[in-house]
Length: 119
Image 1 (tube, helix red, strand yellow):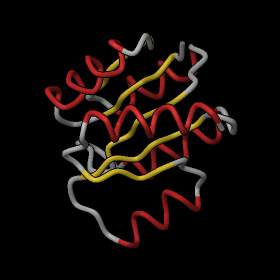
Image 2 (cartoon, rainbow, N blue to C red):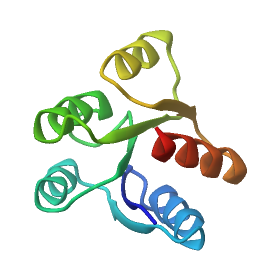
Image 3 (cartoon, one colour):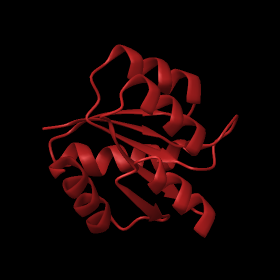
Image 4 (cartoon, rainbow, N blue to C red):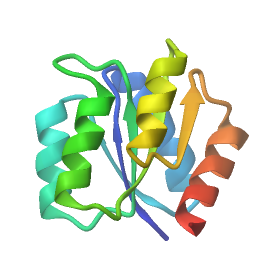
């Protein structure tokens, strides 16, 4: 299946996402640190990144921009517990495949990941 990485400032949220997607057969690496996640993306072939918008040191939009410089073809789904039209617009304009509001429903996450990987 796909090689996915999840970046979320809340470890429990990242672990939950990992469990859901691993059960679907995906290889999932999780991170709570932006620099570790970006370093991982530079050294591995990633099919999909799932990024929280609110992070510890920066934000998911900045990480998305960095990922696009490293791999313009990487597919990305943005997550947020604090949705705004502006962040949704920014994420989608930078090429995010989708934008989800937390807490994300298991079935919704599976569908959005499947759709993003199908593009």
